[in-house]
Length: 146
Image (spheres, rainbow, N blue to C red):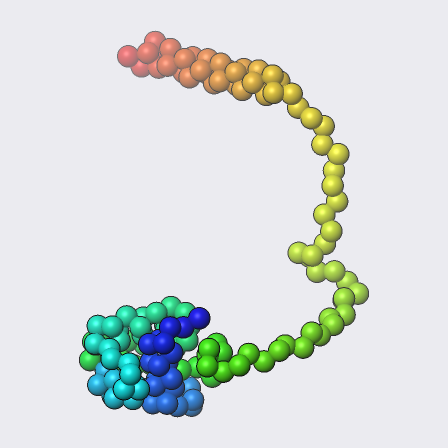
């Protein structure tokens, strides 16, 4: 949902750039002149609003400075709050004969429960075995190398 200022800037940009899918260079003063008289913005506020519109994918910006902007307003922009929302008709999608790889049903395997004591014992055994290997290597290095 856009605020009043954001909606006003978006409408002004749509009016200035048109809908021919071409980047246009627009000056900040030109945008501010196209805004309604009730909306008073500074160039810093205008720059922040344009950044917000870019992040929300309402507009595409190639580059911008505080004085000019190179941007376009795509045809498939989200519906503005001033226009009433059109109801979307539900469509029935037929299920394909074959299932896609990612949509295959996962078969559940029987998982045997492992006790916590067994896990603790195996972890302890592994750490002791690893320490013994490291100690043996250290002894060999000390004996033969040094």
